[in-house]
Amino acid sequence: MDNRHRVQKLTKGAVNRARAAENRYIVWDTGLRGFGLRVEPSGLKTFIARYRAGGGRTGLQRQATIGRYGTITLDQARKLARRTLAAAASGEDPVGTLRSNRQPAITIAEVCDWYLEQATVGPSEGVRVA
Image (tube, rainbow, N blue to C red; front, side, top):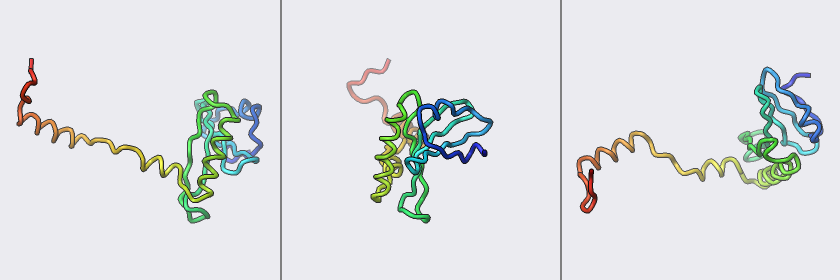
């Protein structure tokens, strides 16, 4: 069987039996569509949930990382995946929402502009420079 397309009931035994291979692969759960276990070549095992934002075949495919096996249990991962997949089924985009809520990072150019501006202004009153 091709390691990249495994499908079986995810049980604790199945998760423990999943072994590292030369390439990353995913074991998809037969009990909860879109829920899977990603196995890295290093042996790291991570639970994921995959869905289409916007629904149907035309929706943008998204993959949510649920958690690392060992940090969370299979039952906890299944519960979190069910919530994520239910939100997606009701029209939400959990991964897209997380991405849009991130605070934009300051760029190097903005830091340089701020630094040059502060350097030309000089030290503020009451601020002692050693």
